[in-house]
Image 1: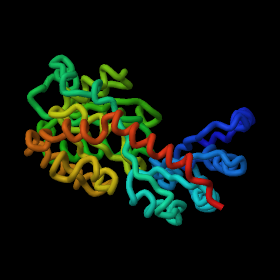
Image 2 (image 1 turned 180 degrees about the vertical axis):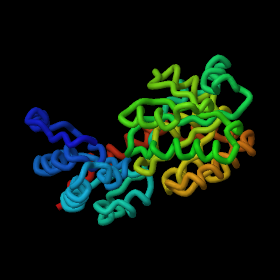
Image 3 (image 1 turned 30 degrees about the horizontal axis):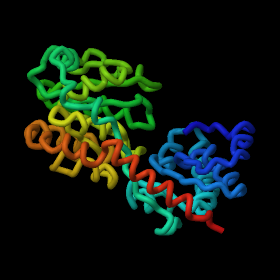
Amino acid sequence: HSLTLPSPALFRALTFRPHLVHLFDTCPIALLTSFVLWLLDIPYVWSHHTRIDHYVQFLPQPGPLIGISVLRAFGTLMCNLCSTHMMVDDAMRNETPWLQNVDDGCKFFWKSGCDVNIFTPEARSQSTREWISGGRPDLPVVAFVGRMAYEKNIKLLPDLIKKFTEAGLENKCRWVIVGSGPADNDVRSQLEGFDNVVFTGRLGKEELAKVYASADMLFNPTVTGGCDLVLLEAQAAGLAVLVVAPRLPVISIVVGDGVRGKLYEPLNMEDAKRAVLECIADLDRLKAPTRAHAEAEFAWDRVIADAVKMYRKALTTPSRY
């Protein structure tokens, strides 16, 4: 989602007339490329995964004002020209300003997927459990996995951990923070001296799978994403992981409040503390259906089959106007 603009090489490539082009989110390169595709009458689909209107709020001033104005103007125009939009649910269309005029016949609902063979309960490791629990494997382990960036609301995580300490609940659970990014040093400095937190840095896929399977809960603070991959990977780890996530429409599809995890009011860390404590009190029941749900809904063979249907629809649907 950087501000990179299409290079001349991209336009030259499009003159070869690919059968279909897949655009990702309403970032600048997608907006400009969509206009070229429309001019050349090349079929394309446009998938929307992220609340870009929320992302621009983290730009330096006057970036947020300029960014949202550009997105509203050009996003609305370009999205109306596209005949096939891929969304996770109707809330993405209803809550994103430039998607609100997209016709029902132009939308296609599609869920992302994950590798359920890599992320599995069988990846659980006792040595990993010892590591991520800080030597207290008997306590529930809450994991954060993701890029440590301010637009991911990572700054809320120290607030939540401190709430447990202030309430004398530091021994209710352990926390493991997986990932790296621009907010890494900030988060580490805020939690310096906390012996109930372990930082792993960025991990490879196999090590990450062990962490998922060896933890008990995944905490997700972001409100800018859609069907975040970490939620699917956590569920695929099955009996060892459940999800604590913001109460957003698309996340409700994955979690199911009180079914495969607990939801909390977005950005409200007091309510997040309540959700974590309720999860701790009901871990076995909440973990039980997660693996089966991931296999049924997010395995790549099913997800790719749905994507192929969408591509075929786009190939037979002319561009609008």
